[in-house]
Image (cartoon, rainbow, N blue to C red; front, side, top):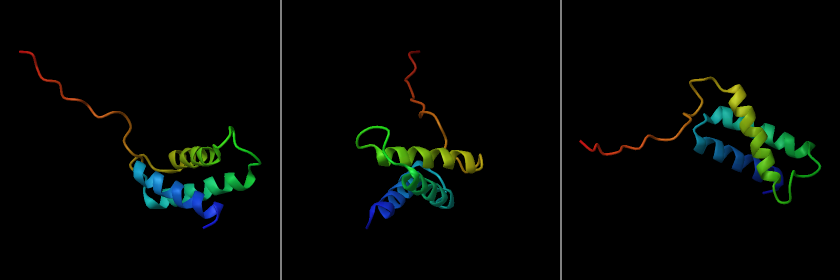
Length: 83
């Protein structure tokens, strides 16, 4: 496995974990790999994958339909009533 395959596979798996459909995750992974090929250096030391994932996630947010996007926000905590 080379660098490009590593980035593509891990971006795809992380986007699927976040709740994006597989087709959106795959196209976004290609966008992340494209950023890797164009970029000469990371924004900070050791953060090349983070930069690629950021651009892939931005692409996923822009290209997915509202019904395909994962739900945002925190889960509501149930608090016991005092009375």
